[in-house]
Image 1 (spheres, rainbow, N blue to C red):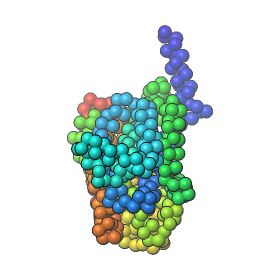
Image 2 (image 1 turned 90 degrees about the vertical axis):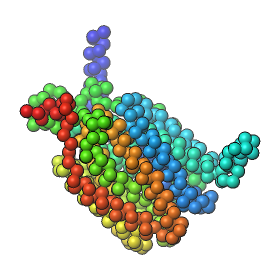
Image 3 (image 1 turned 180 degrees about the horizontal axis):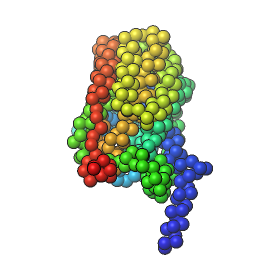
Image 4 (image 1 turned 135 degrees about the vertical axis):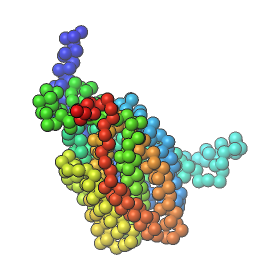
Length: 461
């Protein structure tokens, strides 16, 4: 029995360095690929789908934004639960469940017109006499339901599950590893023009069906190579052997993590200040994901040209993520986050006030720098401040107020456009909020490690 255990441990260590590369970096690449798929389908491609649905069904932008807000209600309710599940169940199972739900959601989306014409909901209403479906567009109801299923899947097995895994695998190089993983969000943006072109040529139904089937086919092989923690393979974070860690006295304090529980994190000012600052900036990002393409097509751009603006800020954001990840492992993250939030806010203000093609690309430059630099750092700093033990739970709880704000932000933008014919008021509001978030970040301080943790023992005389 002992010989088998030693053999298994040896095999894990060998497999932990495929071709001499620490296994954690392979997981970074895998996470980037999976986040690219999620980014294109439930984030960066939303505006393109909104335009396609508006043209196909004639729905108002308020009605279309309602689906996104309904999904945020779901996220607000389930966000903390999703974090607990990731910490308890592990990334592998959550990714499997999540991407299956995403695939089924897109298959459903591909059939909403057909299902709406069948009149099943109206038949149920007339038969049961208490369902309020007789006076509504059934295709819209099916769109809402398919979108909620898709976002449920992305919540369970998408960004949070994958980033929690990366947080477990890295310590000293956490910011760079997270930046590389989250680069998938930007790579998804590169696919938006092709996504838009495919919808224009083939129709949303065919594209949605293809995406759904693709997700269902690949998720099995993907989850076979996922490992939630390096300890599952007999490894340690960053791939540094324990003996090397002990011999490097200068890095001991850095390697010893605070490991806050969720309750302990909630009692720190840093948790709430980081959450408020992220809410202030994230409501703009999610609203632009939905309303940027409609805003640009309103100025005379084609859907494909609007996708090129999206790709332009993606082209800027991608290298910015790597630059911010490199410097964040060496410089104070707080100052870097504040800088990127300020640049992001300036870009949003420009797209709010100007309608020319030139200013659209100025927006893309500034927004790409701010958006790309901010994303990995606001996540990595929580790993640095609160450790690995309850990272997903802490992130899930912090997403509760963010999801609540996201319920109203896209609806606010859609309503203001439907009533004023312009996005000036909502986009300006989001720019101001991002400026306030940048200012607040300057006052965030790292919390003291809770009593009894390894980090506390190393800093206590």
